Image 1 (cartoon, rainbow, N blue to C red):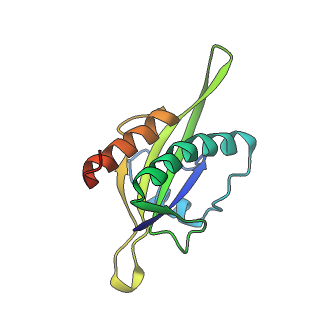
Image 2: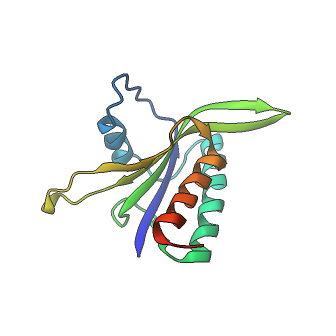
Amino acid sequence: MRRALLLVFRSRVVEANNNDRSIIEQVLKTDPQPRSGRSAWVYGQIARKLNSYIRKYKSIKPAYDLENAEFVIYFNIIEYRRLLNMMYPYGELYVIVKGSPEVKNLPRIVWKTKKIVWANDAIGDLIKDLKTLRGES
């Protein structure tokens, strides 16, 4: 079983050289609870879909703090788009393995969205890839 922590926030880091190290550092130092109303709303949308996957397949377990998590699922909110009086959060989803300093495994990004997408599409893509990787149908 793997323990996953879900994080949702708008990153203050902009990387021009596509170096993921600054994103990893920011994610590993942040508070896991969303503070603002919009971030909490996006967190709820993603968590609902992820919890459905967890209940059905039981291949991962939720973690409630960073110390207990083996990996972090992080959605970086880039923008909100308004369509037909609804707000749609767009951003990038990352899966970050924490690593272990005693074995000299550094934290690293093992999965991320190919482009900026709607939050529900991002978590849907991750779940689809998890099912394929783990042989779940």
